[in-house]
Length: 296
Length: 129
Image 1 (tube, helix red, strand yellow):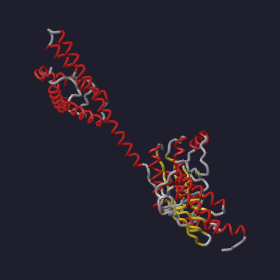
Image 2 (image 1 turned 90 degrees about the vertical axis):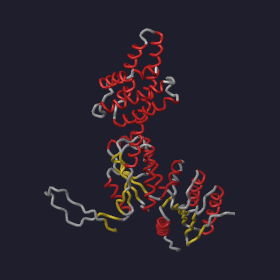
Image 3 (image 1 turned 120 degrees about the vertical axis):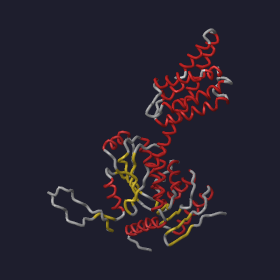
Image 4 (image 1 turned 90 degrees about the horizontal axis):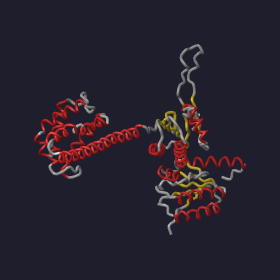
């Protein structure tokens, strides 16, 4: 089989390239015909040498073939090829190879059937292998994105001396809540702030699990001696919380971050004072408030 | 035998846990502290656990018990300086220590106790201190 392919390498390669270009696997904007030609030739070469010892894909002689497929498949996963397009690279080889063995064994039906079976088995397992690697490549992309999201989503900011705010954005799952909780508690220790506002304006939905995570964070902060205020509760979320029967206990909740901030200032004995008289009512601009807080 | 020292300052008792807590030490502290509250007629207890880096459910419960016992003996108790890891562990263990007053630092804790004693004095109309 190996020698047969070697003898007809050029013809097989041409046919295979045609099949790839005309089939679904070709993305001319990502890969030129010349590059595809080089890829295909080196792959066919490696395959022919590997087949000299048999058609078991997991044997050591197939290591170069597998490596080549791994690289190709991972690269295509990153470039955004679909699974079909990636698998077509291997499967489109069937047609030229079958044509080849038909020509070579046209007088020997038994040998023809035998080699057809071998080629099918080989190409199928190579195709499956390609898909596996492709899948792995995609999963790596997903994992990397998840990690990036985790890093992005946990800023703790100081609103005033002694008042921290934690604007939460996105869905809260266990791993994210863990990070959020640890960051917040760490910052409480560092700053010695007795008040923290957890703002959930950016949390799209609240279910029992999310509520439980929130309550745990509040409980942990309380154990350290800091009080938490939950703000940014939208009307639908308030409804959901009540419908689910979640008991927020004695946690202070406020509709907006501004309300929560006002409560926090009051707790610390601070207040906001106007430094200029209010503009008259006809003024189109909304009255400006100075954010100056003074010791009460 | 290893003991955690209990310091008396006026009407306050100060307990600073500087070593790793183990079960027997926690129980000894519980005995000693209740005894001292009665003997010294202490009205306020401050327990500093900022050096405590690990807790298990037993230690967590003992801390809660000590606080509850102190309030039975009419002494206001405040636990200060709990580390984040300890706080998370206690919450995950399902021991949120309801009824225990907490504060961020010894300074905050003393302020809480002072305010409490002051309002007590006003209510009872006696200013013995």
